[in-house]
Image (cartoon, rainbow, N blue to C red):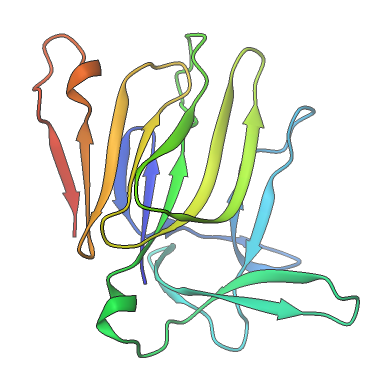
Length: 185
């Protein structure tokens, strides 16, 4: 499945991957502070996902079973799949904002379909909260999100394997185009 990241009001191809001494290549969700904990998502060491320029471009989820009966998911290289699986996408929705001045919490909600939540991390700052989640979206799935400190809403949709983002017209900022579209393909 192709991977995308919604962060700071922009839709990017791939998800940011960093290196960790203990786990190797990982994705960190959320932030570590007194009020919240980051979630660490590791990559399969035997069959790692496709990573280009520090971004995970394609992946699939696999569950690792341990002797302690603790199951945890990891990302690995996608297998050759049918066209229906290839039309699903993995989307990271990060509602944190670099300039969170307002009192609005960052959040997302489902518009259509039934996206599957793979990982979730909720962060908290002094006055606001935000979400940092990874979803699997099938064709026809759509979510609406707003950034922390900003009431502006964005709609992100999976249109038959292609992802689209639009500024919601009912919440459009004065002077901004009503149907501002961004597509990452």
